[in-house]
Image (tube, rainbow, N blue to C red; front, side, top):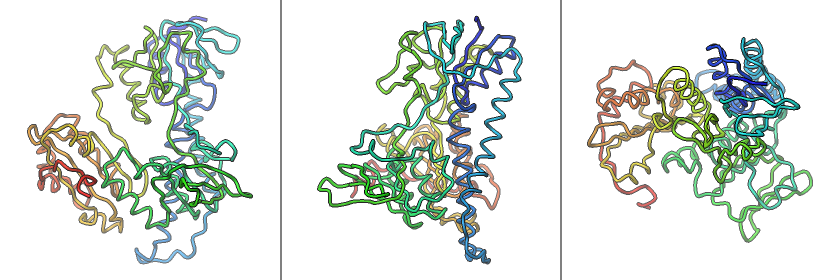
Length: 463
């Protein structure tokens, strides 16, 4: 069967691209072997943020006295929490499936796809052919080679979605974004939680002040954080999972359930990419150029499988780049976008551009502005004063280099800065803007009006 375009996978990029191409009159095939909507809809953003919202509501209710009321004892019904999450996921999942199956000029195949040549894809007993093939197969949890891990039952971000009960003691291997979000939410649901990180601090890609602040508010909520876990191994004693975290074997952590949250890997190992001649890197990610073209003309890779971003918004931007270049006569590139993402702990972290460590490493003259959330009136009004806001400026060009907003509303407020960065405007534009009171964003102009030279030493250098 010949098609004008074949799309493999229905994550964020694939369905949107199929709609654009089918709408332009192309005959399109889209292939999905599992659940429509990809990671974000089924096991990522949508379900986890629904769970975060339930955990936040319970947390605020327990703090009723801070706001002048008493809600009594807060009891979690994890079956209802799961049902709420499943209902939200179901709406998104079925919406993607329905829209594709009702799309004119589009044929949906619900089977596994494998390349048999650069322009041919095998789907069941059929062979589909096209000069344009788009890969959007996403990723899954990466499971490290920890001694004993293969001998115990463990959870990943995907299997956590099936839980309809409260683990008495959830032990999490991995102190980055997935592990921290699950750790805080399950602590608020009522579990005892221990987070184990092999490195010296949480969220290692962030600046040290961000890592320390996150560790601080998680610890206040009763989460045990264990850093520098040496010689980590896993075993089982009765119904418990037991982790040894020191080389001498004297330090053990015992829990009822284990979540492995140590990163992601691409779903590229069973696509037959070698038969198509598509090059991959050492970790299995499909190598692409600045316009998301693979090493084979006529094949593109979008979303998590290309290693150029691991977020829903980067996958969507991949779609915009490919569609803009192929259908709209544009010249859009991956390198045009600014790094931006969020960590959805409470408070959340919104990040854009360079970190403080990256700015120092660049050797440029820089300025920094920083304000604690406890100095922000809106944070006091909400009784949510953890965290800070930080912005980094190029001292010579006045360009905004990066920002970290760890505080209430930080994931939303960040866009005030991000949009100015995309406009390539100097920081003085936002410094002179009149923002609304009382908001968190109103303190950005004040922060930018009180800049100081960035020292050449990091916090770790000074200690």
